Image (spheres, rainbow, N blue to C red):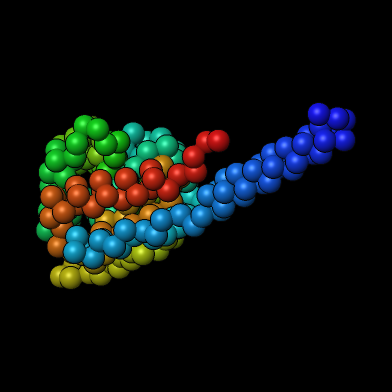
Length: 220
């Protein structure tokens, strides 16, 4: 084989390798550019899931221990949050009981979420009052209280509202009854509407978690 033929073969080999490299690189790049899987459709479970989490506003409130809690404090874990108050005669006790049953139904292989009662009656719901109330349901049940305007802003970011009214000299609080699910980024990723069924809540949480896990960028 003379030198010119050898040179031609080397050039052809380099061209083949270059083309192969471009094809592989394009496939890798295309995979990286694929759109994430759409949020699961969970209407049969009374749940609506957002494709992209909705961030909460910046805030400073107190938890049931009297410690300051901010938006950053909610990061790193899943949280079921809802608006209520400890003197609530019906909706809140049922909601807390449903969440406790949901907690008992969750597989140990799933991340264990927190359950957060954000008070709509901060004048009565001091940190001590919240602690006495939430401790009854379990160690992963917590409460938030503080400035009422801040509480309203947080409630609004969770698609919730609350209104105070006086009836025969007694304060009554009308408030939303849904749960908001916060992801480990501290963003609202789903709304779970009543009526709440613990089995449906547990299934919705598992399916949302599996979707979120599958949607995370994979390390190269």
